[in-house]
Structure formats: structure tokens, C-alpha cells
Length: 85
Image 1: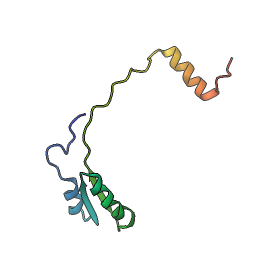
Image 2: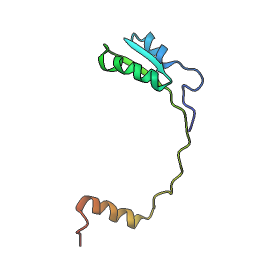
Image 3: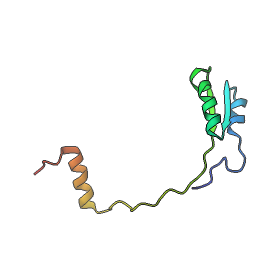
């Protein structure tokens, strides 16, 4: 949910075209993505697609435990299996 370096108008597709990419597109919709799929799979490269997404807040979850003893035991179980003595 933070602004990226492209938030203020950097056109990455134009930069790719300037670097002689065979294909460079900015994709904003599912229909544009579907149309670009053929180029992606069959076109000569290099191929670039700047795919724009809508930022949506993700649901907050509980933070995992920071208890060192529990984390050590869980890690050890993952490595050695739960049948340790």
C-alpha cells in the first residue's frame, strides 16, 4: 500500500520501447491482458508488460508468535520430524 517509483508518471513501457524491446505494453484491464497473452507466448523477445493493479488493503492478521522456545522447537520438528526425544 505504498507508492512506488512509477506512481508519479514514469512510463516503464516507453522506457522498454526506448531500449528496443520487441514488444512493450502497459496493461490496465483483464481484456488487455488476455490480448497480450498471445504476444507473450508467441512473440519475439524481449517482451515487456507493465501490468497495473488496483491497490486494495489486505486484511490484517495476527502476528506470529515471537516466543523463542516455540520457534526453536517448530524449526527442529521441521528438520528432524516430530519424533525427537
